Length: 208
Image 1: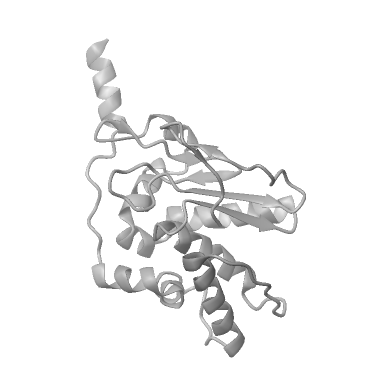
Image 2: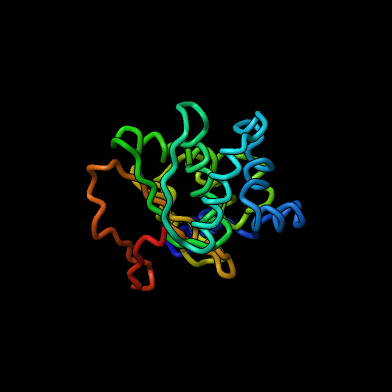
């Protein structure tokens, strides 16, 4: 029985993380939201930025780094939703925000947004190359959320979360985004009082 348990635990352990592929690219992307978009999502941002795009990118960057509120109005199909979703990833992967709550117009749009974020984290090879501490454990789930409960990193549970309404990034010692939370909701969802209890018992509320 003990041997069987040891084999199960060994099979659940993700082992060593891959090294960061391009340290310089990651370092620049960490401090430049526009560069992050262009470098890791070239298939999403294929056209030249307009002056309005650059203004919005600057405002998003400022909000993530320093906080604050701003209203954004742009024509339909101009990339507002995509920019906001990628901003969520930039905010958590760089360690600037520990709990990001993305609000969409309806519950259906919120579900679609979360699915998009999951696709980026589980399928984007460029993110895997430069942010392995967050993306590699997700990749090893292979889309099976039931594997979350037993996933370990050198024997310790990662407490990774991959549910219908939120993502919890893996708890990895030394990772800037360790345990970061991404949650989505429609405007009429139960937004007020949102919180998340970390494995250490600390209560975390949305920071962005």
